Length: 326
Image 1 (cartoon, rainbow, N blue to C red):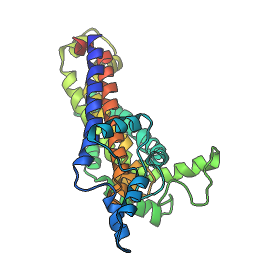
Image 2: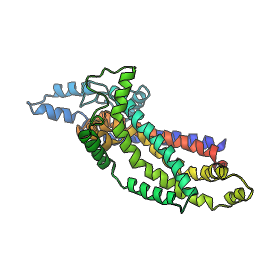
Image 3: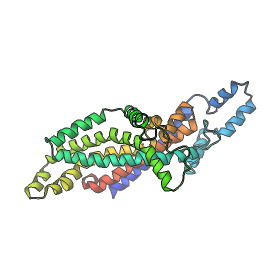
Image 4: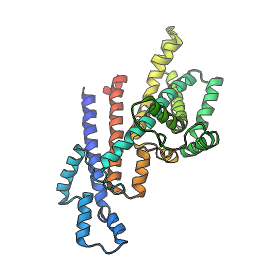
């Protein structure tokens, strides 16, 4: 119990620190958040103080001292009020993120989980068959796939399977004439648009999980408890899964927590190549357009998601490996 309470306390402290840093950093930057909007308006003529005040009021520029701003900032986070987007005025930041988040969670989230499961199973099997043709072929293939930059593979798949072969759509999340709704036609269209970006993410991430699990399990197979289990006549499948693979999985689980937390941030380059309307593309547009409220909300959301994912992994560690609770 002390282990779990300690992890909960550390999570809350880290969460508060992340939220506070996200509040401080934009305020260390020179100028006001309204300067970018004023600069654009000034191209058409002089900007009066009254006009600047009106712009600041529309954009929700914080007023008062630093402490009152911090209290208001915390209240806004609780109510999911991140202000108005500069580049998509007058849309709220929360609405923009809410529209992009489901696409990223569906695409990147599902593919990441599948990649972890498939890679872990293949890596465990390769380690059990170490030195065989299966192990050699899998190792070479995994190293080959891991060497591909995601954006390069995305471009290759887009060109050959999209433009040349015409097998899959080349951009977007669904066809322009398709009306979104809970029906089979819409889901089939969305699935068809997601195949190429999903295949890109799966192929480029699979090799890392395979080699990580393989190397961890090879080290585990040399431990005494595995040898003891084999000497007692247990079936190879039981030794592989319940003894070797279970303990070899723990280091991979930590990496999975980090990667799973980053799912919310999307796969920026892949989403850019396929023009997929996820959080990654939204972050790119926010940075290029200097949309500070949108950037701040996205950075905070990504940071919190990583912290939550690692907190869940820490809890699982305490359940799967009782030694960590000592």
